[in-house]
Image (tube, rainbow, N blue to C red; front, side):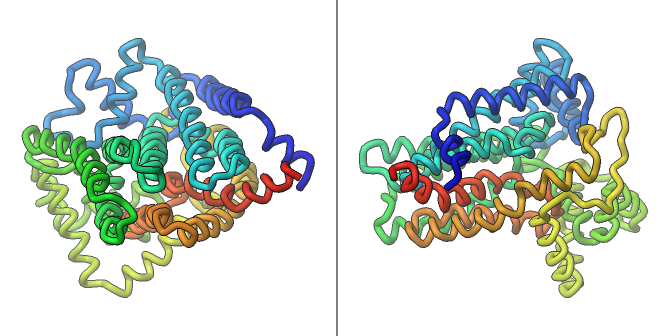
Length: 416
């Protein structure tokens, strides 16, 4: 083991946390008032609407609310985007600390925890998305907090097991209020986890506590949406996303606006645009599933292409990225620099991360939820739309898995 690895593993946690915050805050300050992702404008408009009118968007808006609430809290102080970005910098730093704790507790290896914290501190896409005012940073924070508490309940002793299960459910329920996909993924994982209860590896009481606390925020917000907009759901943009990712997949691969243009020319669009948002979402979703049933071979080819997109080692270099006043996705870096940075991290984290998660699940069946979450996230994006960005929620687990492989070896080296 190199002297550099030893020094990295022996650096105190506070040093990595300070570095994590400095990198994220520096990026936020460097961006200034400029938006770098086109979706940031939509999230910002919803937050401004909440601050100015007390409502999230126009009547009928149904959206997972956590990013809007978070951004609005900072916009109460002033309109500059740097304030919520600095808030996200602090939250992303806390997430790195939580992930390091999770790795240490799940593996029993102090070095695995320290390496996980170190990688999370400097991982470039955690830094990048901490500076985008969208849903990624909040989703990662809730997910990481939930996983830490869940595995404290699964692997810990009887004392505190119910409390940890309830906290896990609450964290993971809140993650669905950041990104609605979390609700579907965890619904499947909760159902499968009943096997642990049946095998007496996890008390039924803990399972009930986790699921009840997970369902509470999801059902509560869905009930609010039913009363306000007539749709018992967390958001109503899934239909159009699903349709663009299936019927107009090839155009969507070129650019989303091409898929939208084709949708607006489709013969059924006139009927769809007359519907209220909730009904329109159902209508477009039905059209997408109808297309899947009628074109199974084409859809399978699309899923194969989406799987490649999901597991890409670096951003596509053939896709044009138009830079405007509200969109600068490269954040000033050239294509070659983005590719180089990606190749420095992604291949190793993906390959060693998947191997590490598989090893953890073989060692303790209670940890099977980690690779299941990876598969669930990929599955959601095989159905809808897929790109490298949508892999971000599984990167904390891949970092943890990779460090779980390296940590014990480093522990032995340091002890020797």
